[in-house]
Length: 133
Image 1 (spheres, rainbow, N blue to C red):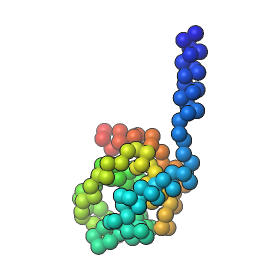
Image 2: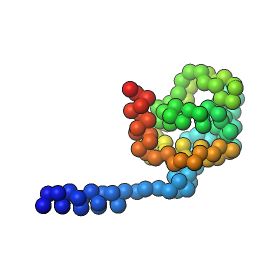
Image 3: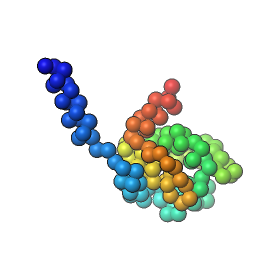
Image 4: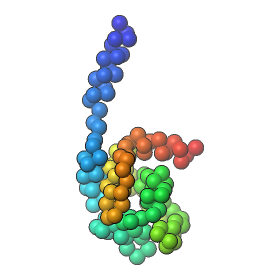
């Protein structure tokens, strides 16, 4: 009897989860970007003086785990983006895992960037475990 109850509970929890499509995540990520990222990285993703670009960014596409970590926790120190060195501070914006996933899906698929896989909140949580170990 307990097994049946647990089974149905699992089924209910599984099907009531809010799974987003890549397109839904992208649209939510666009709103988050406009609220938190636009003032430094600009509407075209090209950054501003001293702020690295997200548009056509080799760093972003080649360092997805580090990029997720930077959005979630902030970033300090030198990075090289499209052969240009940047040395600054990006503060944590206080985004939760779903918001980080959404904004990653937006920036990974905007301004000449293309990433086939969807970033999920679970990817963000798993990334925290990888980086912190």
